Image 1 (cartoon, helix red, strand yellow):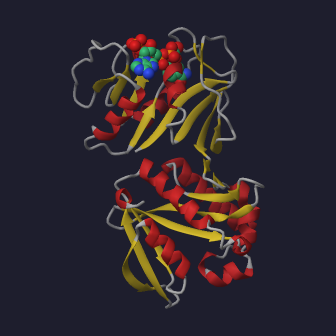
Image 2 (cartoon, helix red, strand yellow):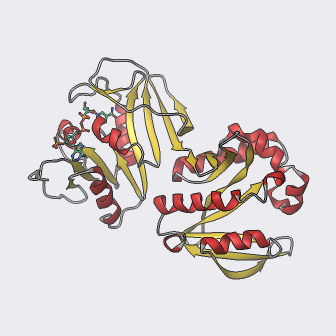
Length: 337
Ligand SMILES: NC(=O)c1ccc[n+]([C@@H]2O[C@H](COP(=O)([O-])OP(=O)(O)OC[C@H]3O[C@@H](n4cnc5c(N)ncnc54)[C@H](OP(=O)(O)O)[C@@H]3O)[C@@H](O)[C@H]2O)c1
C-alpha cells in the first residue's frame, strides 16, 4: 500500500485558518476527488467536521481521541471508520481494504495529522498555491534533504508537485532517478566494462538518457518506487544506478524487476547488497503482495549470491535475445529478507 500525503499548501506554508481553507480552487478539489475516489482517506476529526459530510465513494478513516465518536452508517461505497491514532488508521487501511482498484491510502490533513505522518508517507502530492494568506494551520516543512521533487505541473494560480523520499542506508544515499542525473547515467552506461557486461543497457546519447530517466521519474510518481541513483553519503560520489522497476505482465499481473549497474571502480565494496536490502524494504512497504524477480547471467556469480541472500530462488533458465543463457530468480515480497 502506498501512503500518499495530499495537501494544498500556500507559499508561506499555510493550509488552513481555523476550520477554513483561505482560498478556493475548484480544479484542485476536482483533482482531489478523482485521485481519492475508491480509496482510503485518513483525516483528523477537525478536517472531517470542516468538510461536514463523509466524502462520497471513499472510505474515510477519522482520527480522534474521543472514544465515543460515532461514524455514520455506510451508504454504498461511502464508509467512515474511526481510529484513535495515526498508526491505527494506517493499519485499518492496510487490513480492511476489500476489493479496491488502487492500493493507495491518502493522508488528507489537517495540520496535526500531516505533522504526525510525514515520516510514514511514501510520497507527497502537494498543490502549491501561489498566494501567502494569513492562517493558523501550517503544513510541516518539506526538508529537501529528505524529499526529492519528481514532477511539477505548472498552472496560473497553483503548481502540482510530487515529492518522493531519498533513502539512507549505512553508507549510501539512494536518490530517486530523474533526468537531472543524465550526465552520470550516460557516463556509466558508456563505460567500456559496463557496456561489455550489459550491451542491452547501453544508452546512446544524453537525449536518450534524459528520455529514459523521464520514465524512471514517472514511475516514481506513479508507484513510489523505481530505480535510484546511488551515492556514497560520505563524499557524495556517484556509485551507480539500481533498484526495482515495476513491469506489467501480459496476464494483467505485475512484478518488480531488480537490476543495477555499478561504476566498475566502486564494485567489491558491498554497496550492491546494501542497496538491494533497501529496495526490498521499500517494496515491502508499498506493494507487499507482489513478486520480485531478477534476470542474471550464469557467469555473474556475485549477483547470484546477492539474489540468493535476499531470498530469491532460481525458477527458470532461459536464453536472452542474443541467444545467451540467463537465469530467472524470483520470490514473493512478503517472503524476502
Ligand atoms: N489545505 C489543505 O490541503 C488542507 C487539508 C486538510 C485540512 N486543512 C485545514 O486544516 C485545518 C484542520 O487541521 P488541524 O490541524 O486543526 O486539525 P486535524 O489535523 O484535521 O484534526 C485534529 C484532530 O485530530 C485528532 N487527532 C490528532 N492527533 C491524534 C492522535 N495522535 N490520536 C488520536 N486523535 C488525534 C484530534 O481529534 P479529537 O479532538 O476529536 O480528539 C485532533 O483534535 C482546517 O483549517 C482545514 O481546513 C487543509
